[in-house]
Image (cartoon, rainbow, N blue to C red; front, side, top):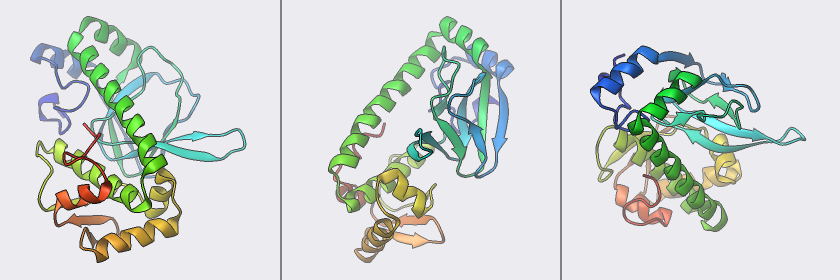
Length: 238
């Protein structure tokens, strides 16, 4: 796949690159694919590449000393995996759906980032976006009700999907949730029963409609945002 034809071209780490810079990236990149449930990297492993998620969704988890695990994040299309200048992986990353990564060897990418301000600037933007998201996630987990948490999660997925298609979220929308209800419960700090109950309540109240196993139809995106407790623009997600 050529960079100019890539579905994440305008949101990924290469978003601000000029044509000559894209040509350099073309010569460096390689793709890796992962099936659902397959480990991408393990916490503590040495990671010799960095990557952008092109297709699919992966979970980030951390493991405690006693073996318990906690989901601490999601990697969605255009998100960046790995950290320039750091060899060891801080989290487990596991494919939730089929995942395709656009990869770069870490050391050549580090060198190119030093020579290419567009890449360094975009990576800084993405890092600051993640910091904002982490702060807002603390608010969600600490202060929002179960109903608001579910509505917020669905709104996040809807906004990201709209952004990848260069659309503004609004009106009637249809999205595919990347997580099972059990995984949603883990991610949102809820029980499976609470997630199922709140999804059913949102459906009963006409906020969402369900389609298949993970499909969700939003008759009115603005109504969902109201239920999430966020601002009218959808709150924290950039």
